Every structure is written in structure tokens, then in C-alpha cells.
Length: 75
Image (cartoon, rainbow, N blue to C red; front, side):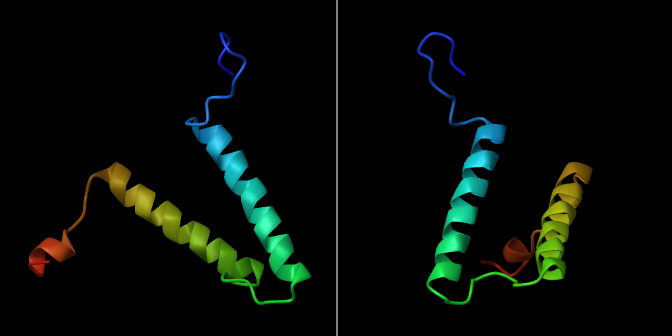
């Protein structure tokens, strides 16, 4: 919290993470209430796969390796 004004710093990662979770739960509940399919994997293994993709992306970034495919294709 910002001590001077008593406001929450919305740019901090923990605050953004909690805000994203709250929005996600709210939207997920709305989708369930309206009985429409969610635009995400409906099973835990699918969600874990998405987390794995994100972690792999970050790992390669931290390792500092990679190949710029778009640049190689001239895009």
C-alpha cells in the first residue's frame, strides 16, 4: 500500500495477480451461470498444460536463448 495516500499500488505483481484471479473467478462463474462453454480448457490437465507453456516460455527467456522466427521469415 502507498503509505501517503492509503491506496494500493495497482502496478505490483501480487496485486495484479489477485485482481486477475478475482476477474477470472467472476467471469468463470458468469459463464457457468449462463451455461455457456468457457473459452479455456474445461479440465485441470488442460489448465496445467497452459501453465507449463508459460513456464517454458519464461525459462527460455531467463536462459537467454532463442531464435527470432518472425525476423527469419522477414515479418
